[in-house]
Structures are given as structure tokens and as C-alpha cells.
Image 1: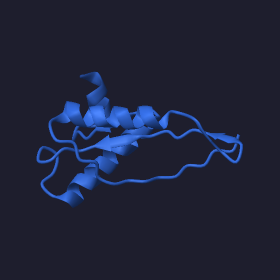
Image 2: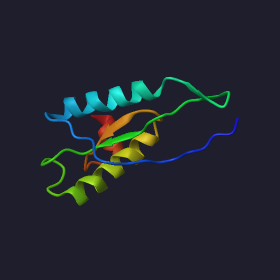
Image 3: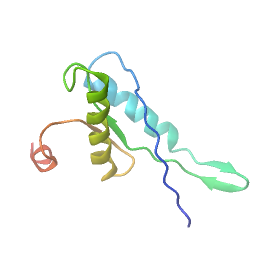
Length: 96
């Protein structure tokens, strides 16, 4: 199997709280799980989504994107999942 990894990022706006943003991330992941075909090849896309929330995690767009990016890299360790930014180290997050 020949797998390629590509990255795309951009803000997704969800009005509400962390649960609303997590719900959007879950819907994105579910919709991307469906296999599709290109030139007779079955293709599958996975998504690792990082979430940061305004104004809780950052006060400006640059800081929010940096924090969402950090959360995305944490999500990548679990494959096809999402992670909400937290200033705590990952080991402390998993203990609580």
C-alpha cells in the first residue's frame, strides 16, 4: 500500500462552546471516513483536528491558529481524532 500524507488547515467557526466545536470536528471526521474512488483506486481520508477556542485559549487569530496547530499534532498521535488545546502537558491531561 502506498500512502501519502497531506495537510490542510484553516479556521472552522462554530458558535457556542467546546462541545459545539467538538461536534463539528466529529462530523468532519465521520464525513471523511467514507471511501471514494479515483481512477479505479479506493481512497480514504483521515482527519486529525486541533481545536482552540476564543477567547479562552487566545485573544487573536495568530495565537489561536498556533494553539489549534499544537492540538492537531496531539490529535495525530491518536489518528483520525480531535483534540482541544490545553496548556497542560499531555501526560497530565490523560490523568484527569
